[in-house]
Structures are given as C-alpha cells and as structure tokens.
Length: 310
Image 1 (cartoon, rainbow, N blue to C red):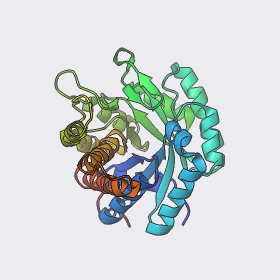
Image 2 (image 1 turned 45 degrees about the horizontal axis):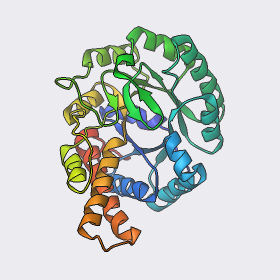
Image 3 (image 1 turned 90 degrees about the vertical axis):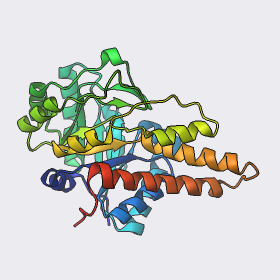
C-alpha cells in the first residue's frame, strides 16, 4: 500500500465531527508506538516530520520506517512535512515522496505568505501532493519555530477566506489561542471558539488545523521531574477544549510535546530504577509503550477518531 493524502481523511472527519491526530515522529520507537495505538483504536492518522527530525534521522530513514509501518499495519498513512519554512524544503520533501507538506509562511506579511504558499501549491498539486498553510502566528517554541507571545496574532476570518481563494491551499492552520511547546496560560486557558466558528462558516469546505494543542498532562511532567528532570510546570490546552474544536470544524490536531514528555518520563524512570542497565532495548521498550498509551488516549478521549476506519 502506498502513502495516501489527507483529502478523504479530512472529508470523513468533517462529516463525523472528529479530528485526525498528526503525530510528530523522530525515530523507530515513536513510529511503532503510534502505529500500534492506531491499530488498536482503528483510527486514521498522520505521521509528520519536522525540519529538526529530518536533520536528526535523515529523510530516507524516516520515509523507509513509515513505509515499513504501512506494510506491517495495512493502515492508510499520510506522511506530512510539519512547518516547512520555505519552498526549497517543501520541494525536497515532495520529491522525496511525502504525500503532504506544510508551508509555514506565517512569519511573512500577508502578501508574501500568499506568494510563497501559492508557489508550493502549484508545485505540489502537479505531483499529487496536498498542502497545508498557516495564517496567524502561534506563540511558543517547537524546533525552529520561535514566536514571542507579544508577536502572536490570531487568524483574521476575512483574511482566511482571501488567503484560501488566492492560494488554492488544501488545509489551513489557524491561530485561536494555542501555543507551541509546553507553556503556561496567563490566567484561565481560553480558545477563541467564536473566531473558529466564524472561520468554519466562511470556509465550510476547507479543513482547519490546530497547532500547539498539547495538553501537557501533569502526571508526565511530574514523572519526568521525579526521575531527575527539571521541566517547569505547565498548563496546556484542556482536553475538552480540543474536543470542542474538533466539533467546530478542526480536522487535524498536531501532537508533539505530549509524546516527548511521555517518552522521556518512561526512559528516566527506567534508568533511575535500573542504574546498572545499559541495553537501549530495555529502556526504549517502555518508552515505546508510553507512546502507544499516550496516542491511544488522544485518539479515544480527545480526537474522537476511534473506530472510524472504513
């Protein structure tokens, strides 16, 4: 089975009012944990690769691992570039066989964002690849994406309509109050659902994407810190808010920080409890299990995509 695009996945998600999890991958154990979770929950999924992951693991290794996952599981899988910073990296991933890419032109002024997005769309569509773009700026840090809170801007609904019409982009990442990485809300967590509803109403046929949606579950932060860590306490996006966003038109939810926390907690716990151990399989096995548990939780309780495979 070859890689698939997200086109039909998103249509089904819009109709069923659930979201597809887009999980960032960096190595074999993360991919295996995610795949096993999707098999158990009978859920579609997107595996996405950041620029940092490409540099760390090499594009060819990641692609072959994903191809192995498809062969082993029989699942329909999208391989997606997360936060492509320019046309060149998007082109490279398209040429490498990715089925979906994100061009993140949110750092540019509106017209420049349109120009670079349209260039990627034209190249990608000619190759049968779908494109995600971003309008608005999320605060926070994730790999090479760094935006101060004062520079964050919410997505303007009217600009979103113009952006989609002029670029022909397949899906749109919007800013409604989430933030990349583990961070603290100032005061009560709040997402601008009124803004989301307006964008959904104006763009009923355009799948919407939510970045920075980590819930930062306290038990994983606590576990990391109990076993030698120094991760600051953080208040992420409450899970019920992510579920509400899916009900209001968000079709894709990016998940990265929560996976890192789950994996790190498992590795630290094992090494502290077994200081004599030096076999990577012994501590990466529990880490893989932690990834699977986290992804199953997300699919079942947050995204609502369990048992939606046809």
